[in-house]
Each structure stands twice: as structure tokens, then as C-alpha cells.
Image 1 (cartoon, helix red, strand yellow):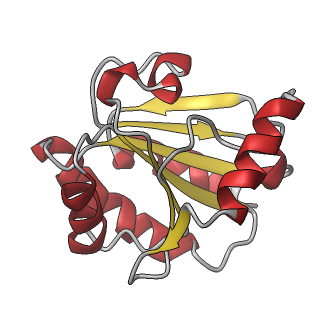
Image 2 (cartoon, helix red, strand yellow):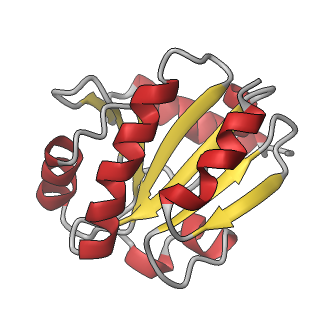
Length: 157
């Protein structure tokens, strides 16, 4: 995917200026990001989880996704990213901790369904999990974690 130079400069500037903070679980919290820096995940399978702390269905799926993450956490070929549709930072961070979402990458711009990430990936309801293959092609867009387990097992090889 092509990344604009201006986005890259803004992204690096935000990181350098301290907007990237550490969650107690060791997660990277990218509060002001409206996109995924795909160049960081070249040749990796990427699981993107769209969710929100106020969604009971999302919270249930977060626990399932956490179980799947534990299965693949030592597989360097798979990366998990969560994109929250939250509007309240405290609720968002609490849910990450409560749901044991211990993977490194969490993104929230606090714009709910107006988020660029949400619009770009046509997310109209949550939870929604999208799996991208090593070439960055969307290969699965599922509602539940169980629907993607077989895809991950095959892609992880």
C-alpha cells in the first residue's frame, strides 16, 4: 500500500512527541492515528479487530480474540491490531485491560463511526474482524473469531 510522505511525517512526529503511551499490559496506544502503517507489517498476516468498550458483542469477541492471540503470540508471521470506536479514553483503556487484550497495537481516534479507519474498511457494525494476508490483501472479513480461526491456521504456515 502506498503511504503518503505527509502521513509518515505526522505519524513519526506524534511518536516522537510522546503521544504514544504505554498501557499497563505493555500495549502501544496510538490515540491519534487514523491509519495503520502497513509498511511495518510487510510479509505478515494482520488481524484487525474493530470493536468498542460499549458494545457487549465486541467485549465477548475480545475475550475470544485474546484466546486466539495466546495461540499465535509467538508466531512472528501474525500481528494483531485493535481499532476501537470508543469516544471515551478511560473506557477504552479499561476495556483493553479487562478483556486482556495484551497484543501491542491498539488504535483509537475517538471518532466512533466517523473514524477514517472505520470508513476505509466499510465497518458498519461491530465487532468486525478483518484478516489481511502477507501481501496486504483482505482475505477474510468475519463477524466472529471462530470464523477466522481456520484462515489463521492456514496462513500461519
